[in-house]
Length: 211
Ligand SMILES: [Zn+2]
Image (cartoon, rainbow, N blue to C red; front, side):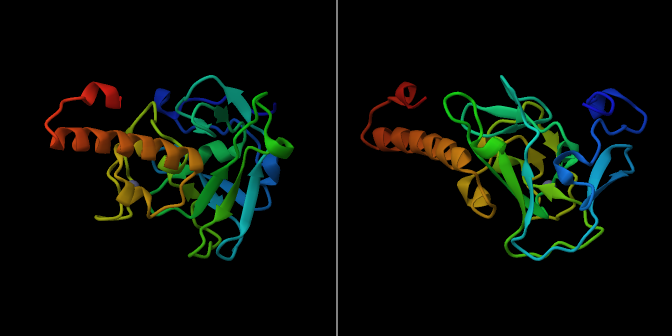
């Protein structure tokens, strides 16, 4: 692996240096790094792409046992490190890309070695110079490090605090592309709430069974 180690950007004060060359995942034709005003790295589109376009596959994944500040969730129980420039793609509540992850089989193998696909949003063209972003709750059910969102999407669009899909109502999640494992986990969450409501309405207290 070329480049320096992946550094947690919140642990250093100077500009972050990219740990991965953009040649990984063939990103160099489409992406350039830029430092934000906070010294962190963002990823910027170098090309125009029409809505719905394939952007890239994830091919450099490294499975990890649990969620980290930089990992991506690929099933209810699986997580990967991207181990490429894609790791610097920031969250936005008005993203430019969506990510569909693929779940591994029981041996932990990903289909054709690919852990997912990034695409341009279905209803919005991507322009050169725009930051590449995606909606983190579309893959992450519970983020280990919640943060106050600075995406600037504005009131009524920005979710305010990004902590994972678990903390957002389905009505908000339904606005975005959601991966199947998130839909299932949210349905389990909301189904559990409905059980409590129904039981409560007949005068029973069975909250302990709802999880
Ligand atoms: Zn936001």
